[in-house]
Length: 53
Image (tube, rainbow, N blue to C red; front, top):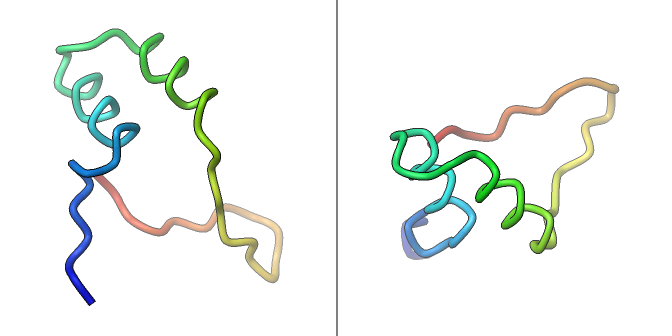
C-alpha cells in the first residue's frame, strides 16, 4: 500500500491553506459542502479522532 499524501486530496489542501492563513475559512466550508465525506461510526457515541493535518 502506498503512503497517504493529503496534498492529493483537494479538501485537505484547502484546509492547510486556511490553517496557514492563505485562504479564508469560507473557501473550506464551500469545498466541504461539495464533497462526499465518509466517517467511521464508533460503537459508543462520541468523537473518533483519526488523524491530523
